Amino acid sequence: MFYNYGQLETIRFSDALIPHLKKYNLQSDLAFKAGDIERGRFLFDSLVATHLVGSQIDNYTLKNINGGKIKLGEIKKPLFIMTYASWCVLSKGEIPALNKLSKKYAKEVQFVILFYDKKQNVKKISRRFSGNIKVCFANESYRNDVKLIAALKHTLGFPTSFFLDENLEVVSINRGGAQTDPKITYLKAFNLNYELFNTRLSSCLMKKNLVIDQLASDE
Image (tube, rainbow, N blue to C red):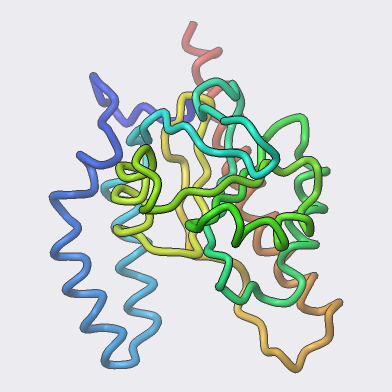
């Protein structure tokens, strides 16, 4: 695992989040109503860093758009999960950037795109993602998705990225892709998204390697 933080036992993600969610939502709503975007981002990052990093997400079973199911805990390597809804307007260049990165990190990380939507609404957009990426869907109307939706969608919203280690422990959680102006060129938008996601991924993998080295030196 990536982190220990002196914990005797791993804390479940929902148990780490729920005691702080009401206060976070109140402060975040006030910040965004006041137009203080930076304050809103600071509150989100603080919630993640202080309370959520090191907690363990449940071993959810996701429905694959191509058929079958995926149990997160059976993947056996770090996960980069992006959450969307089919009606979200993804920023220009975002999908191509994720496709390229999924190829670059194919041996180290499993990319998962999770749409909070019904299957028929996801089919079309799912074709734009690389074969290296597992495209899945979850929706309130599916009984088995209720806990996942409550824990992830209705707490931190979307689009949101989760980087989990091979034990499903949270390494990092971030808001979605790059904020791009619709008027900028495709190439510039692609580069912005690529650099943003690549920085997040390389940072998380670097932390993993540091922890592995530290564990090795302590043996």
